[in-house]
Image (tube, rainbow over all chains, first blue to last red):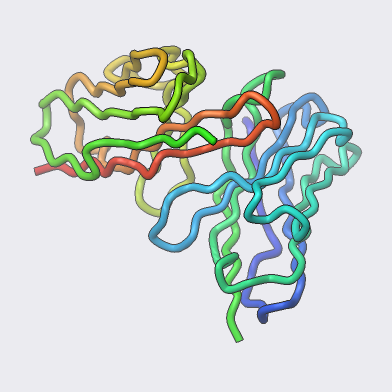
Amino acid sequence: QVQLVESGGGVVQPGRSLRLSCAASGFTFSSYAMHWVRQAPGKGLEWVAVISYDGSDKYYADSVKGRCTVSRDNSNNTLYLQVTSLKTEDTATYFCARDLGSSWYYFDRWGQGTLVAVSS
Amino acid sequence: EIVLTQSPATLSLSPGERATLSCRASQSVYSYLAWYQQKPGQAPRLLIYDASDRATGVPARFSGSGSGTDFTLTISSLEPEDVAVYYCQHRSNWPPLFTFGPGTKVDIK
């Protein structure tokens, strides 16, 4: 079955960097676009980034543009999100999600998330 | 940028009742709208995409309708396990930017 497992979260000081990982299994990872979506504590969902199936196309939310880099390793079925210059407002649970199809519209499978807490 | 608004913010109903959740877009999104369910402490789950198509494994009591700017998620007969926050979502044309509504919380009386 489809499984997405995020890791790499934790407590980090403002201004520092962090790399999140998402290990995928149960499907042909290299055939799907993948997303990062985050959720601040007690708040709604905010899309962060998308990467195409082969890594050639990437797009970011305005709130993270210039500070986030999404990447993938199709040989190891892993998705990454590098976040630099962390701010307190980046505190959130970060979910990786698989795109539903080839047109990049919806998120059909989600991981359980990894919590990032930015605090001094 | 398209803004999605959801109403009501909270819906409290008895088991077996019909739940009607609304999502309104600031401009036409045609039928490119999805609904997600997020239970407490869990990841979101895709329920409906393209406004009215049920995702794999979603019970038939969940249905979606609408097009243009007004959309509805209906739970025909509320079950206790349907307690959750429900979000609508859309993707802008280009560049692809994905937007969620603020959510509707469904409680059981």
